[in-house]
Image (cartoon, rainbow, N blue to C red; front, top):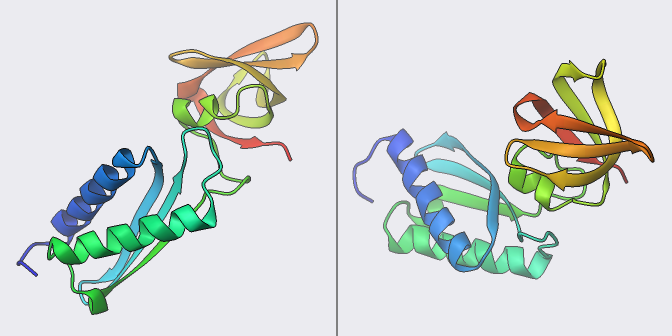
Length: 157
């Protein structure tokens, strides 16, 4: 293992994960690193662009990334553990890419600023623009919600 600082190490692991996931057409949803240099815990949440990554795919990605971390001599095998999982149905939607996955689905959305007097909106996601989403809140009413004002959205299950 070469002598690098923790921030640089975290960054290099993330870049490696991004490269592996991109080659497999998998989206890296969340990336967290905790612990000390001798006992690092890497947590990754990943999904397919259309949603629905399965346990087998997570296991393969986990083994591939762990092997590459060792091959690149970023960390020895006994100095890290890696947890790779799917986001599940209750994962928060925050980015434009998150919303694209759930077009046509019913969502519950929390806003920073009120739209039409509401800071919470529940309805069907009908359109995703570059900077906003459109939610049908009733058969005759739609709201345009700026992406920058969305705190989070959840799929209504």
